[in-house]
Length: 191
Image 1 (cartoon, rainbow, N blue to C red):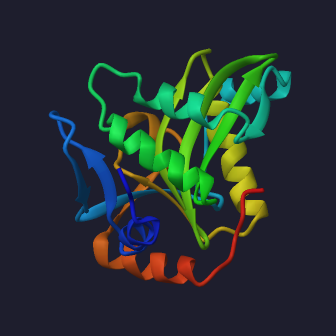
Image 2 (image 1 turned 180 degrees about the horizontal axis):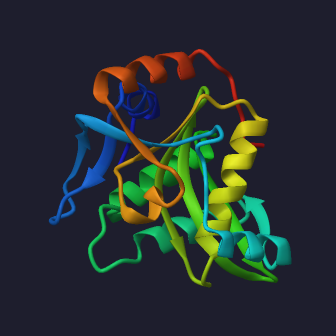
């Protein structure tokens, strides 16, 4: 199937995101409120995770195994990442928009975060882990990287208890669109 990458990026740039429904039909979705991971002092994590970080049990990589991260994110009982959406992520990766931020233990993929970068916005699509704390360490290290690279925002799309522990917060759609417009004016890169 042919996909128009420019149209897909335009959809994300307007504040929408792609998801598949229960019958794998792909569609664009929006939200009245969005969840952001703070890139300032509001970002936090449990003290137990600080011990894990201090032990340096995980190595961090970007795009070392993009396909495995997409597969890991899609490997759930119910998933919005259909085979068609996996193809789209692969094309976005090949054109420099999609990234996998990964943690590794030796040659084992421990966890990862799948996201799309447009300007100064990192749009987190999904995350997973295979080794406990793998995705949590990825989150901390990704926030550090986004700060270093002067990203404007880390969009996590929807709130869940896991993200709340990292200081994630909701903003209304109008405020989100204003922040997104500001982010689109930046030229940031993860690598």
